[in-house]
Amino acid sequence: MLDQLFYGNTLYNWMISLIIILGALILNKIIVLLNKYVIQKLTSKTKNRLDDILFQMLESPVLLGITLFAIWIAAKRLDLGFHVETIIAKSYKILTVINITWFVARLVNSLIEEYWVPEKGEHTKHKILDTHLISIIRRTILTIIWSIGGVMALNNIGVDVRALLGTLGIGGLAFALAAQDTIKNIFGGITIFTDRPFRMGDRVKVDKYDGFIEDIGIRSTRLRTLEKRLVTIPNYKMVDAPVENISEEPMRRVSIKLSLTYNTTPEKINEAMNILRDMPNRVSDVSEKDLVVAFTDFTDFSLAITFVYFIKKKADVMETPSQVNLEILRAFSSAGLKFAYPTQTVFIEK
Image (tube, rainbow, N blue to C red; front, side, top):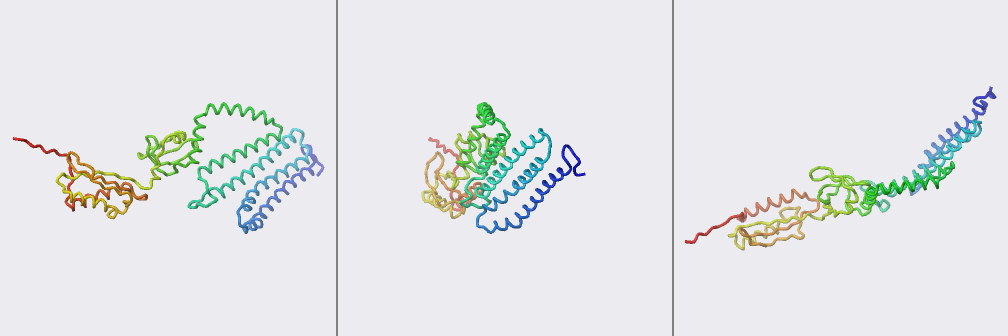
């Protein structure tokens, strides 16, 4: 019975090939258990994470490699015909290179994740790069790894890689000429990630737009204006245009002019100026630094006092001026200081 032929091979040979594949699957299960209960416990006792990452990333490619090797051995034992054997041989060469490439890509990706990507609320000497820049670097490195793996796989099955690269080079040049703006935007995005003139959530002014950065992409930047409209700006324009990062200001400057009536005495002018100088003690979010109070103008209908103050970094830039203005009204009213408004006095001579 074992000598009976099925598709050109005896039942015995089919059974041996099947046993080889089953043996590989059993070996894979043993490796998984060994890695889980022995190797990982040993690596967890070491001081660095490199060995943990190496064995974690190595497990799946090793399992796939054992399975592919077992299938190849099992197929080599059988007489499947020249055409099928050629397909299996080429597939094995391609899948072997892809499996190795997969391991390298997994390992590199895990190393980037471990040593470069910052965790929330954590800034260590190892995790030094911006999240968005890391995303671009990660994609670039993985694209290069898979491209090299693809070229090696094609080369293994006899494809003329040099001719293929030459064709791709000509096509790439034509594509580059047709996509100059896209390339400018990509380089603009890289410039934004490296120079970091602003970050996610920052309020910026660029051209005629004033709003908050919602997203920084490789091609464009999205800004939510104060009117709640979403504006998409090409990255090369963000690089070329002057960008004012309002979120990076240490304090917000406010300048106002207070107009008092012409019958205000010098003593009352001094009292008004002292009230303004005392504003940091009256409103907690007003900074004591760089406070400016000066009697600056004799206008047509009033005596003008210029008051310049700064709002502290974390304070509400709308609520604080409101508190200051209310305090000025209260203090000036209590002191009997009167605000002027446009008036004219007409003298009629007899």
